[in-house]
Length: 102
Ligand SMILES: [Zn+2]
Image (cartoon, rainbow, N blue to C red):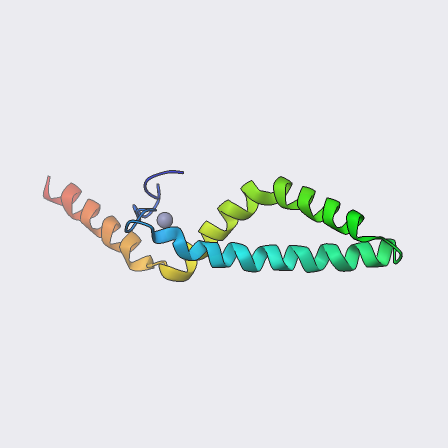
């Protein structure tokens, strides 16, 4: 993960253990994944037994873990830190002021 945003210079680690809350976002994403998988299996094979459900869901959790981990952190920082377009215009103004003073 980058330390700062290349565009707006926002730090991606605003405070220690900032991404603890991303755990709950990841939990919600996993529940959505579980429900979609459960109903998907029920539609494909209504007579599937517990071992099939467990096998598919455990495999799916392991395969999607890196994606869910990153997406939940991204959602969390988007929820907590709002994008401020003013920063862009302020940095543009400061660069134009510097160039005009030279
Ligand atoms: Zn940015």
